[in-house]
Image (cartoon, rainbow over all chains, first blue to last red; front, side):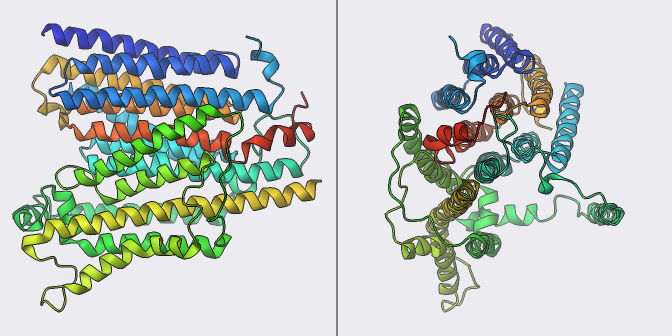
Length: 102
Length: 337
Length: 108
């Protein structure tokens, strides 16, 4: 295995860790806002690390850029859906009391 | 390695069956919708795993993206209407806790029918698998004619050239579905004013950033069909999704077009496909047979027209259902007051 | 079988183990769709499914040398926002709070 492969493995394991964290958080955290927090870690860091690892294996510039575009889109989608869900929950119900006081 | 691969396949297959079952049996419609979205995603993974990226691409765009929006949007409309009519339950989602549509039929006859249908399907399926020709059926015949097809990707060659009438009729099916929606909920909602997003600059900005990208990717997927998995359907769905995103964010999204322009957009692909097919007849070729030397160009023309029409149709699905939901919610709101 | 196409044997195992792990994550997250308690929670699970699916697809693209799967992942990532936005903004979202409070939406 070359150094690039080791880097892929390291980043891949890190990504898997954040995916695991996101899933556990989604399952175990007590309220919606905490769970949102856990979810965005999987979106940003989980997929981010995974893609960073795969970048070492990219065989062309275009393939690498496409991977980066996928991650950028996931970042955009993750953060804006987090915002939309959080805002929706805050404006629509009394449950804001539980997690709104930041 | 293969052991892990088989483990992955087994888990994925179990997951898919579980999701399908929960989507059908869920007591709450929102739950069913989410399971259905997840089901589409898992199916796309399964197609990817089986080495069929064409189908995975279509499933990703239609199953996980578009159908999810249609389901969730319709549910949002009807559950809001219901919520304002019934006494609130302190349930902050307003999700209907028990809905007649979500219950599964419990009668013995229904169960017997389901079992009989399952057995019949299994018998037919086993018979079909047993009769499957060796060597992949028509794959060799398709491969032999690739040089005349005008494209480099075999799937596109089959879909747009060798069996073009299949694709033509599929576009027709979409048109029929549109007519069904027209009949069921009416032909309204096309013309509308811009509804600026109040206090929601982020969604506004996101839409402005994503829509051009969606149009770009749609064109990329369309062009890709020549040599790689891609093509009119996937491209049209992404373009339609861009329109839907505009509508959701409150933009007009062709709201200034009169209804006749919408209708033209809906039938355009089907009609052009038909015209190209018929034009082959006087020249002594078969229906939908392109001239061999310019087949690639004709396929591109037909695909572009179909992609535009598919995008229009899917946007019209959303627009009509959305308008119907809004009417319903308003009516129920009035009744509640 | 896609695995046989990759020439680097140890890396192939690594990718497929990683996809298996991500799929198991997805299956576990399904419990949140059952439990809810709110539709927003369920949508978040769908969001996590989507991201995990994108991860699995880019890994499969590398493991099976099928670059077309990256396009599938791209389409997934592109359409990911639609479902959530359809939910939060679907019904003239701006008048929603008033309508709900008027009905005593928070009886808790």
